[in-house]
Amino acid sequence: MKLDLDTARGIFASAPFMVELGVAPTAVGEGTVSTELRVEKRHLQHTGVVHAGVMATMADHSMGAAAQTLAPAGHWILTAELKTSLLRPARCERLVCEAQVLKPGRQITFTEAHVWAVSGDERTLVMKASATMAVTAPKA
Amino acid sequence: MSDAGHAQLLARGREVLDEQPFSRLLGARLNVLAPGRAELELTLRTELLQQNGFAHGGVVSYLADNALTYAGGSALGFAVVTSEFKINYVRPAIGERLIARAEAVALSRSQVVCRCDVLAWRGGEEKLCAVAQGTIARLTGRGQA
Image (cartoon, rainbow over all chains, first blue to last red):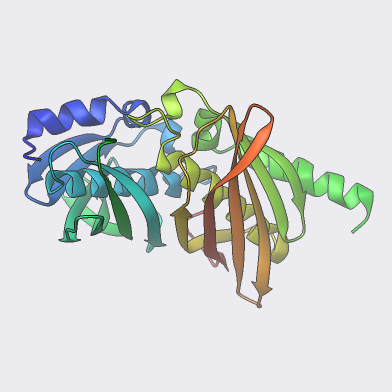
């Protein structure tokens, strides 16, 4: 499935939880998707850092979209498993996620993502994630 | 732990949950908190779904992550941080609510490995939709929660 930025924006906008969080794609390539989120109070933990669930969600959906760019027409992507490593606490203005396909497949696509905490010009790696995506065929 | 101790632990756990803006956004409720054991629940609504109408994977992983952290936190003492976790989505999460049940399985001085099942409730029936495992570490100094 060829995916341009406008199509990707439409796909993200069709997932209510992405809209609720405010995650939007900023770049799309063959097997790569970048996304961004402006951090607001609703994204935080009681300690004032961004909740890991926000970063995991962002990484998950961005990796799914990256897998979608290489999926056959009509097929859709479901996350089969997700692993996250929380490297550092995130206190920042924005989160930026860069997701890429490591190996596309007919049934399974392997992906990974990095999530960065960004404030001004400063960028810190806060999460490393990887996921196995199931490529789901249309129902006959 | 005495009944009064259990009640106090659960009350403190609910206070912490209420102080987490992201947990309030998702509407999570803490049903059970005992040393090394926790149950979290949330009601599904449109905002928490993905494009196919299932609960978003991020919502499921949030619930698992927070339940793992509560199980680990109650086993270790309250200041903890999730250092890593892994989740397998075994079935689309469809239903009225999700329940995450987590338990500590291996406790050491500085960290605890916890396991969690996430169940989807639909029409009075519960179905396993995800299994997760993570490492919860004692928090030293500043940090993630």
